[in-house]
Amino acid sequence: MRAEAQQYIDRIDAALDLLRRFLDWDRALRRLDELNARVEDPTLWDNAKLAQEVMRERTRLDSAIGATRAIASEKADNAELIEMAEAEGDEDMVNEAIASLKALADRADVDKIKALLAGEADASDTYLEIHAGAGGTESQDWAEILSRMYRRWAERRGYKVELVDYQAGDQAGIKSATFLIKGENAYGYAKTESGVHRLVRISPYDSAARRHTSFSSVWVYPVIDDDIDIEVKESDLKIDTYRASGAGGQHVNTTDSAVRITHVPSGIIVASQNDRSQHKNRATAMNMLKARLYEAELAKREAVTAGEYAAKTEIGWGHQIRSYVLQPYQLVKDLRTGVTSTAPDDVLDGALDPFMAAALSQKVTGEKVDVEDVD
Image (cartoon, rainbow, N blue to C red; front, side):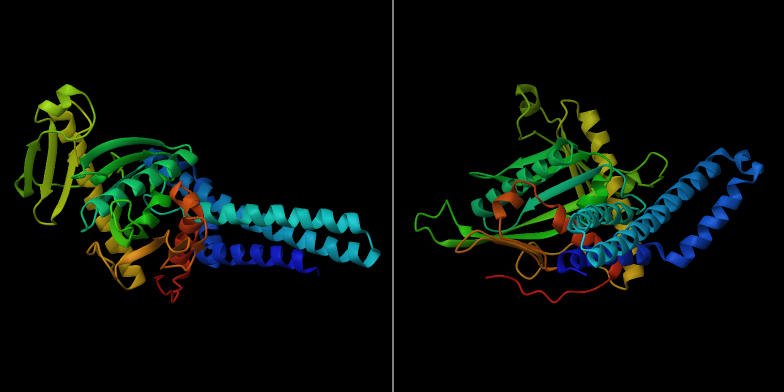
């Protein structure tokens, strides 16, 4: 087998292995048989909501199992074709089969990520918060760079982005910003970005042109469905109104239309200022609070499975998930998965999918990578 063909086969095998592990293959096959039997039972539709849930689960499992089997079958067919063509000296057929393997490897990678986005809230829209760390203007500028990066990533995927809350920096950049990102699997992808992000560069705000290290944090949580009931006691809330500081017209900036809600038991703080109506901003902030509480519960469930719990941490050294080095060399490095890019300009322009895909895969495999941070 030629090295190029074997490379594609290895990629396909790796994707198939991850898919089977994610599905818990034998259990998934048994479960699909059970669901098929339930669908044949005419009494299922006596409970329309239950029937819809069963049909959704059956469709998801059937699709994932079918796609996995199809990829495995096509891989075997093309590998056999290459061996036959090589034996017969048919170079055109060999090249055609290798091209088919490449296309199949690309498809396997896409199907793998689709399968990994099967969490309880993965299909939901998402909120994404960015907060500047200590360091004044330099960190606030970094926070604004991150906000542009995520907007560009969302635009690349065809998602819609709305600014929910914005706190301008003292001289430049932002202290914080919250975005609502709308699109299929927006939360499933973006959830891998929660954590501290570190920037190393020659500061444009330093007259001596010295290297500076800056930190900003990203926090991602899903927009929850109306069917999900999150109880929030009014007595647990501290509600403040204030004057909006972002762009949005004279009325927005001269009235106390912005709303900040603090959930005292958890310490969670949310804010909204994207509307001229204080009432609407309060409703938006309440939805955000419920989403944060729901995300916290999802994190606890995941922690039970993983055997650990990574809580929100200090925005500073030792807590970063990714480093972006612009000087004296060019490198972006993810400290969870080891994925790197030598094109930070592309990453900061929204090319985040390879980092997200690796982080999603790691959640399934549970494999820890020993990664050293960059200077």
